[in-house]
Length: 469
Image (cartoon, rainbow, N blue to C red; front, side, top):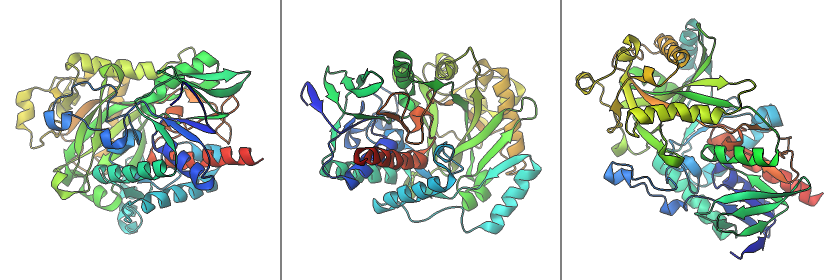
């Protein structure tokens, strides 16, 4: 690329929202000059050494969280097909419009090879029984059909999407960081990269994911882009034997349950359930280790355990305005105690307020799938309020699926979902700067693959409509 270049649209980030934005732009206007800038690698070069060495070597940037397809490339790949799950699109676009966009983005996934099977649509009698148990435990069951890509199949689907976009003429610059966004007189003009290249365009789309949320927060602060203090989700990843979750897994695949705790009235939710899956580590900038989970389609990769996240949603009021730093600080405490690795504690020890030891962990029927997790004491990491929220949620869940609050249940910490301070956008996802649009998880607009993908389609149409006006 030349030291300065001109484009019609620049997309920062090559995660699902950016991919689907480029897809729709080039579909409707094949001669459009589109540049995607991604700080990670192309998908075919996203290889994590830990898969063979079993030890993180600190790749910069991390191939699990960055690169084409973003964190979605190696996620469990669950597409939530309900507008009630995965973000704020219904609040911005309206419920019916969101339904249409979710269907369109789902059809694109199917076109590129997604499994046609959908969970949670043909087991009404069983779902009614789950809902009845949830109601008696003061839990709210959010019904959401799920299409499961699977970690390895999702990777193949995104590989096909990358090949398609390149074949259609979309320009992609990998291993490149946007250093700054050029804004003059309230209008976006382009971007400056860390390679001292200046790229101009009348439309710039910030499609960074959660990994880039801190970067975008600083961009907003530097340029006075209007934001509101956002939410940070903090909690643990729970692991149990498949038998404990069998009824929920077979009938819903992912049971989305919300609870307001009796002590503090805090919102706690289940998220990202992985039947027969494995717990994994994600690494962010400066080596910050947080916990996540995966599940594979192939039987050869399946385990005997189910894992899912329990997340406490924390909203802050003035004068505090750094929810990302708050979440990082808690994760750093865990890293400090575990030598940069993930902490694990049995629920029995969690309730008794004592550290889990290697010896007690070895007694368990439940074998941890994250082999390098360090036995420890989560009370040294979490504030008392979050500890109480987690305990009360697990006890409530035990009424829906008995055994989940057993002594042997494993809790891994810390799981944190970083979202930028909520960027103020209009119905076209334009920020307070003309021509600068913010979409996806990193802008606190969406919280999952499917709404992020739908968001990309929506903003592409807004850009096209403006160009044709």
